[in-house]
Image 1: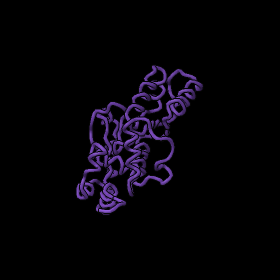
Image 2: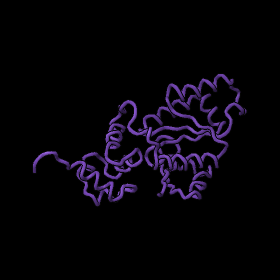
Image 3: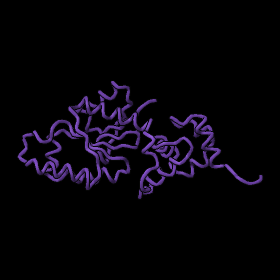
Length: 213
């Protein structure tokens, strides 16, 4: 199954998009409002070198970026390349620890440390594959999302054979739940990952009656 990742134009010089392409990822260039990469409209990633992370703590940019990631409506993730405790910036280890804890606990954004650009690219490829085949335990668990977009995504996951990744694809293709309900089997089957059997099950789900006629 083809993996598509949207990359912000500013990431061209990093070389990571070329690494993604070498891993058979379809890279699309856009100007993102938040983050550096967007995977399947589901995961938004902010990539930082260790030095950039510390600099963003010093100038306060980090928490503005966290707010942007949260407002994006996608699952946020920050990847730090290298060790933020070993940079040339004059900042205490306590301040860095405080920033890491604030991002993880207050903003509830996971932070992953990678060893370098190649490792970062590999993390993104793995994240894409997790979307295609998500673990059962993350499906429709926990409190219902507050935002309309997340509520729609949560609702679509209740359809037969539909997990998080396919729910996003359905909403991206049809835009609204109403259009999904009205769609015929052929249109549903054209969505990547759905196929004829799932399309038929979804179509029948919305037209099932338990009474005469």
